[in-house]
Image 1 (cartoon, each protein chain N blue to C red):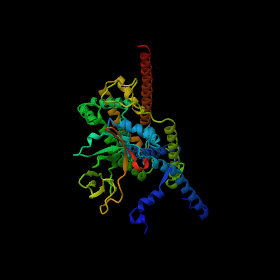
Image 2: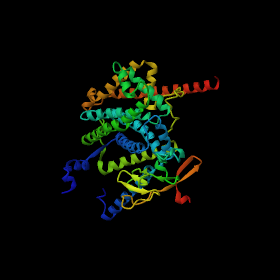
Image 3: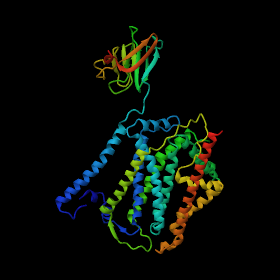
Amino acid sequence: MTLIDHLHLREPYDAILAKVVPRHRSSIWYYMGGLALFLFCLQIVTGVLLLFYYQPTPEAAHQSVEMLIAKAPFGGVIRSLHSWSANALIAVVFLHMFSTFFMKSYRSPRQIVWLTGIVLLLLMLGFCFTGYLLPWDSTAYFATRIGTEIPKAIPFFGDAISGLLRGSKNVTGATLTRLFGLHVAVLPLIAVLVVAAHVTMTALLGSAMPPGTVAKGKTRFIPQYVLGESIVWLIGFALLLIVAVLHPWELGPAYDLTKPTEPPAGVHPEWYFMFLYQSLKYIPEWAAVVFYTLVFIFWTLVPWLDRRAGTNRKSPLFTWCGIAAILGMIALTTLAYISVADEQAKAEKTVESP
Amino acid sequence: MFEHLPTKRRNILRWLLAGGITAFIAPFAYAIGKFLAFQGAFAGSKTAKLSAAELTPDSPSKLVEIEGEPVIVVREGDNSIRAFTATCTHLGCIVSFKPQIPGFYCKCHSGKYDVNGVNVPGTRPKSPLTELVVNQQADDLEVSLTPKNSAA
């Protein structure tokens, strides 16, 4: 009796060996989910390594990151890899989400896969938000001040949510401890479980094909597909290493809580929050909260709203919704970067001619 | 994976694959190993400074920290001021100075050392404490982790 039989794993083992992936003109997008999984694992490995040297207090945080970059062997690369691959992960997660959206892979019987994916998107953005403060430089400090101020616009619970995130009236050492705890314990625990559910369900249900697409053939999951996927991983990893080594992730000057200062000119969130940031310039906070909550609910419920795709027919209306979402995000993000550049140019002028 | 190939070619391919994966992982394992083996995260102070007046007949010894190491500075019976590593050589507790022995005592397992830091036979420590260099300028004492023997 083999170990597999002994552990009662014969059925899933045979199923994985027999698993096939359909091949068609859009099947290249299937690689995005695997790539996101790889980057998530890379986050765990580099994150655990950083955890061995990082000190989560306002007095020591910045210094410990500086020490890690300057003195610990390969510390700078590991830290850069963590930051860069976090950004790559967000980008890949967006590509993965929109590709499954346009391929209508969310339709029955894969609604739960879509739902867990939505939860993962929120978790990944949560990781970015909570991890951003940890180096305790002034950009991180001000970004977190703003980021924890925005929830106050939520009706009824706003102040409570902001207070829960900050752990004090303002962004202080209490906030650092909280966000650190969320970043290294709470979010990873939930994320690992949801990733496991997301991947297991995908494995069990197999890959969906866009409605009306004809498969050109099938690829065996093991070994052909896994080998193909690993090539994608290796290319992604190589690119990240090159970027991490040649363009180390910046670490601004430490923020001193006892000496409050003005924010740096043109302070703005990371690129993935820029469209939200720009929206706040056009509509009041409460309206933004209402609008994006509605969009989010719509987006989450798409598998149930898109009945045509549910019965394997084309659903151009939803395709157009997706295109509108992408165009809207690109337009707002572009406008946001233009206005940030303007503000920085203005700040430079005032410095030159006071 | 290579079932459709003849046994010999199949084995060569398997070795190449395994070798390739190992060759890929090795440099990363090396980098991570180096990263984890780094011990400079805690620097501590290079030297400890104190005043000879702090060592009185009532409290003739003082524990100080140098580069994270506990060090005991002591005024012995003949009025000489000496410094020893305070880490017990048995299992790493911190020793104290007891004039009544006279010498050093470790609470954890009743380890004893004489006034020269030499472990007392029959007690648990099997090697002596290391004596360190004390630079004395009038009343000012400066101790570093330099062993007295190697400095001499």
